[in-house]
Image (cartoon, rainbow, N blue to C red; front, side, top):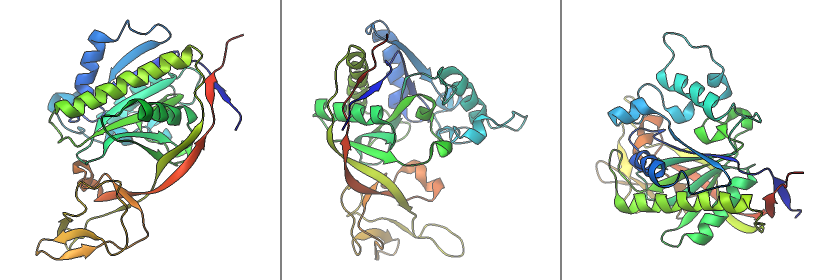
Amino acid sequence: MEQLLFKPMSRVAICGGTHGNELCGVYMLKELQVSQQDRFRSFSLTTVLANPRAVDVCRRYTEKDMNRCFTNTLLSAPRTEVTPYEVTRAQELNGLLGPRGSEKAVDLICDLHNTTANMGLCIIAHFSDWVGMHLFKYLQEKITSAPVRLILFKDPPSEMYSLESLGKHGITIEVGPQPHGVLRADIYNLMREAVDRALEWAESFNSGTVFEGGEIEVYINVDKKDYPRDPETQELNAAIHPQLQDNDFCLLKPGDPAFMSFSGETICYEGEELYPFFVNEGAYYEQNTAFKLAQRESLLLPSISVKKQQ
């Protein structure tokens, strides 16, 4: 494959607190403001507390999930007295970090998140972003303390809805398991290593390092599964089965136990063989999602390097 050239990562933003009860990112920003501001010479580093109102009350959001507020429709919507705070804040962030799709947008955004699911360290990126995928490849090579996996979304650019999409390039760093509203030292340290390595990669990229291509393993988001529910009340009548609990990214086959009813009966998975992730994510109960499902594929990356200025 032909080597691809990209402009330098001149402006990098680390965001946390997009969900106010995911505490690793909140405290990571405090640490970065003390320890990292003058460490890198080839780019300016901006730290952004994305949803300060939600952080103040230690809730995922106050009115609307902020990480679903970065659609083109919401970013361009007129503000009124009833506009949810998170929509207003998303528009402010688009002005600060974007505007999305413009030359003024920051070059790289890393948005920091926690999950209650047993997912280890995951990088979430868009299928079209070679820079984000190379960043994952670098983290996977450098971090040995935990599995590092890549989740890809194939949403059309017009349907992107999450914060990292404001930048020219962007990734979500998702680390778990960690309960919401709680800070675990092991999970925090894993996120800190990922952030340190990501900034290290940007510095190396800007210095002219050629990042060689190669084959990577990716998980492509394709579906989701809801909990079994009472057909009349829509109340849950089952929980994640113990054999599935904490087994994110383990192949789920038709007939495998997926749920256990409150009376103790096993409910088996029906569908094609796929890989579950975000299993029993606490924040997804309101989204009618017991777990998401992915296809595992191999993807060939091209080599990339910085485009030298004339």
